Length: 178
Image 1 (cartoon, rainbow, N blue to C red):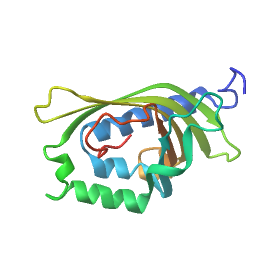
Image 2 (cartoon, rainbow, N blue to C red; image 1 turned 90 degrees about the horizontal axis):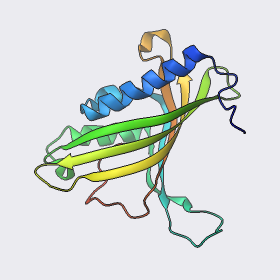
Image 3 (spheres, rainbow, N blue to C red; image 1 turned 120 degrees about the vertical axis):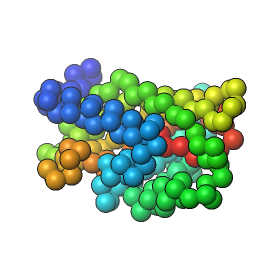
Image 4 (cartoon, rainbow, N blue to C red; image 1 turned 90 degrees about the vertical axis):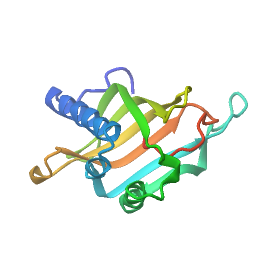
């Protein structure tokens, strides 16, 4: 791949995708989960594999089959609906999150209206009056499709793949979105 990874992606597209990813993260931090859900294509997939601690030079450190989350837009909607009820006990009181999205690199794909956005994500989460926050560090790969003009957001997430850096999650639950 080399370092010339943005070749074939014009500056306007790169900036538009960066802005989209920042606004998508802001929707999560402001608990506007319905707005966030609208950023996903109808055929979207949201996938977070399990990280496994392995010996040096092992074939893989991300499980090829186990997932923390493996959602479609439909199952993401179920999760959002649950957060809107009194039955989301893991989110009582609600989490306060701050998503930091950095090192965004945009690459072309074989499809003219789709791009791959690589990024790093750090999520800071605090709850209630707990004195120790949770930190979630991840690398993300988002396959984005240019949206129809009527959608307003410009892009839709077709596939979000995020790999947490830690093998052991330092939180009581994983009820947030990466």
